[in-house]
Image 1: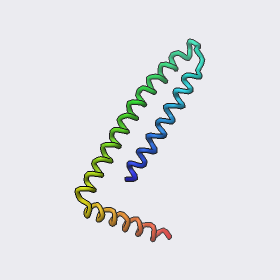
Image 2: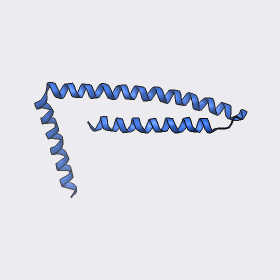
Image 3: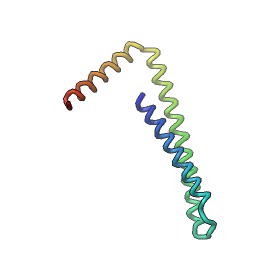
Image 4: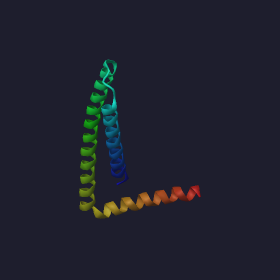
Length: 96
């Protein structure tokens, strides 16, 4: 579940990065020496959009898989969550 939440946060950060880059691209000057930089930025933005779409698809697929597993195996999911909670509790207890 944390992985999906981190994926959501990462997705939002990537969206912000794309928006900021697009704003910089629009604000740039039209000089000839910046045309090459503008083209590289556009290519990078296109690649970033593709990666973002792939990340969103992967996160969605994983969330559906986890949901299906938990619905099909509720007791195993509870046991796994309990085991993880126990380990986290032991680790946190040793620190304090």
